[in-house]
Image 1 (tube, rainbow, N blue to C red):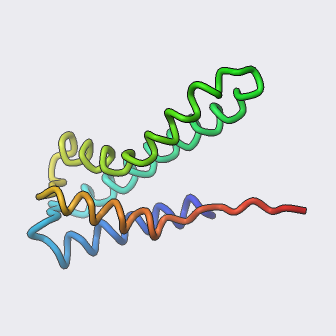
Image 2: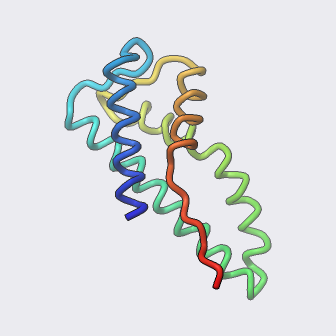
Amino acid sequence: MRNILNLLVTFLVFWCGSQYFNQYISISDTKTLILATVLMFVISFIYGFLLTVSMISMVIGIGCLTTPLLVVASLVLTPIKLWLLDKYLTGFEIHGLWTYVILTIILSIFTVKVKSKKE
């Protein structure tokens, strides 16, 4: 459920950005919008999987090296994902450094996190 919510939130942020702030974010068509949303989701899913594997591998000592690197990478992961989409996805363009910063903040605020249940 959390993944579907994150996918919808990313879609809405991209759609609102392209509709109301089209001088900063330009998305050519609906297909590009959906593809950008799915690619953003897939990159986030792969990162989450790598972080989980890294945490699990702490038992054997390898995670002690990789987990801090992945945590630091999470601070810059969203702007990197946006930059990759801008660079390699035709029809998806982001204009200006502050647009990256604002999109990163908005996506970080509205991305749903799972809280663990303590019994």
